[in-house]
Image (cartoon, rainbow, N blue to C red; front, side, top):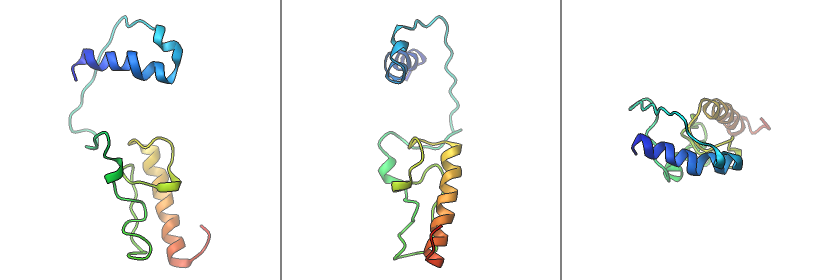
Length: 108
């Protein structure tokens, strides 16, 4: 997208969907920063293709878990399904707890 198109999507769609009063906002100045190669390469709609937190599954490989902002956490989803540090942090705890549960059969 061009810088102008990005600003248009932000002001016409994204911001008003979050806070309806933003629909009345007028852009007086803008700048779009683009940093190729600085974030993960996930595209819209690719969420279902990401590996699950449980890896291949507790019945297949009980001692292998996946963690990071790129994994699907199922019922333990944290916040947005996008990529962020907080999601990576929480998925690490969830993977560790899952590993403890599958190894020691305890409530962790």
